[in-house]
Amino acid sequence: MRMRTYTLAAATAGILLAAVPVLAHHWFPVAGTDPPIAFSGKVTRVQWVNPHVHFYLDMKSPVDGKLENWEIELGSPSALINRGWKRDDVKEGQVLAIEGFLFKDATKRAVARTVKLPDGRELLAGSHAGDEVTPTQKK
Image (cartoon, rainbow, N blue to C red):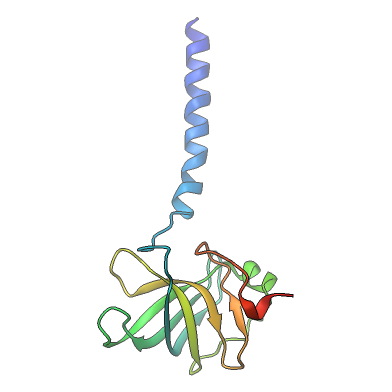
């Protein structure tokens, strides 16, 4: 009986511990999911790395209108490629229009849902912020 209890306890602990990394990585850190906000800015840096691509933009704060450098999180490089992105689509100095959600911790960060590139293409950001098909992407 005692061995069965230890086995059950060990199996339960193993299942719970296996779920922790999934919960930690996919935590949804934004202030709200409706409606998304629109903002734009000039790209100052691009990090095309796993697990998420990040852009840094000089833009007016959607909160108070002051010029600030914001970090914009997108999906993984493979998720972006699957949605039509190319690694060189975004370069420093370009102005991007983004629709997304602010992080709820009041930092200068946001999660993108869509990104409108200077050539007019609007691409899904491959993030956990919702990947509905936009009118420009319908087939």
